[in-house]
Image (cartoon, rainbow, N blue to C red):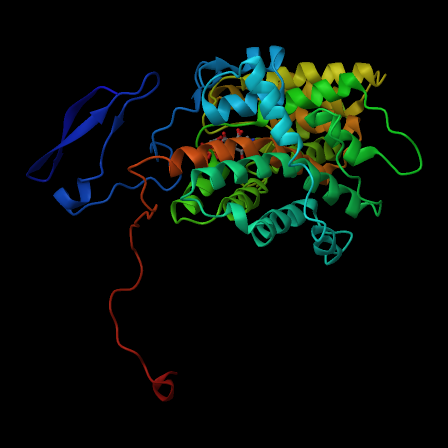
Length: 430
Ligand code: SDX
C-alpha cells in the first residue's frame, strides 16, 4: 500500500494527513490522528465517504457495475464455480485445488447436523414467528451449545466456529421453515452437495423419497454465490463492530442477521416481492412509479437503488437470467409477477427521476420471483440471503480478528443536546 500525505487547513492550523492508496479503487485519507491534532471529529452518519477498514476480500466499483471476490469477477464465479468453492475463496483468498476443495466439502458436510437439543429450542417459538426472528435467536443460541469454539484468540477454534457456521446455517434455515409449516425436521444427508442438502431438508417429507431437481439446485447454488459477500455493507459492518469487542462468532453472526433483516437491506427481497404483488398488474405500474418519486410518500421501489452501485448491479443481471432459467425449468410460462417486474424495470430505466438518481435494479429485485417459483414462502427470502451471506460475514470477521492492528470500534458523535444543568426536585416541577 503506497502512501503520501495531504494537508487540511482548519482555522489558522494546517495538519498533514497520510493518504493511503489501495490496489484498486479510491485512496483514503487517514484521519486517525485528526482529533488529537485539531480537537475536531469528521462527520459522516451514513458512512457515504468513510472507509471503516482495510480489506482484501471483496471489491465493488459502483460506477462500472463491477464486483470481485478476491479479484475474481462475480460473473465468472457464478458461471463456473459452486458455492462451497466461493466459500473457500472468500475465507482463504485463493481458489482451492481439487484436493483442497474435496477436503473443504468433506469438513463442511460433516458439520451440518445441529445439537439435538436445538430441536427443543425451536419448540419455544410460535408457529407463525417470522423465520428471521427464529434465525437471529437460534444462531445466537449456538454459542450456548458449542463452547469449544468460542475462544476467538485460538486460531483452531476460529476455524471450527467458521466451519460450523457455514455448515449449520442451511440446517437451521430449513428447520425454521419446517417449524413454520408444522412439518417434521429433516436431517442433513452426507451424500448430497451443500445446496441439494438444503433443498431436501426444506422440501422432503417422511412419507416419500425426495428427488432433488439438479437445475433448481444449480440455480440456488448460483444465487448463494451472488449473495456471499459485498464489502462493508450494513450487516457486515455490524458483524465487524460486534466482533471488535471480542464477542464470539455465533453472537456476531446473529447481530449480522438482525441487521440484514431490515427492508432497506436484505429484507428488500421480501419487500420487493410484496411490492410486485401489491402492484399486481402492468397497468398499475405508473401509479407506483409516481408514488416512488413523490417526496411526501414514504413508498420506494423495493429492489431498486443502491448505496454503491450507480450502474446496474452485476448480480441483478445474473439473477434475472437465473429467474428465467428457473421459471423455464418449472414450466411457468407467464408469471404475472415477472411481467410486472420486467415492465417496471423497463419504465423505471427510462424515467428521468431514476436515471438522474442512478437507480437500477439491485440483487433483491428478481430474487423473490425466483425463490417463490422454487417453493419458498416470502418470509424465507431473507433467511436464504442470510444463509449465503454467512460466509462473507465470517470471512470479514476472520480478517478483522487476524489484523494485528485491530481495536474495538468506538465512533464518536456531534452532540447537539442540552448543556449542563442541575437536577430539579420533584416538588419544584410544575
Ligand atoms: C442490499 O450495501 C450493500 O452492499 C447492500 C447489498 C448487499 O449485498 O449487502 O447490496 C444488499 O441491501 C441491496 C439494497 C436493497 N434495498 C432496497 O432495494 C430498498 C430500496 N432502496 C433504497 O431504500 C435505497 O436505494 C438504498 C437503501 C438501497 C440505498 O440508500 P442510500 O444510498 O442511502 O440512497 P438514498 O436513500 O439517499 O437515495 C438517494 C435518492 C433519494 O432521493 P433524494 O433524497 O436525493 O431526492 O434516491 C432516492 C431517495 O429518495 N431513492 C429512491 C429509491 N432508492 C433511493 N427512490 C425511489 N425508490 C427507491 N428504491
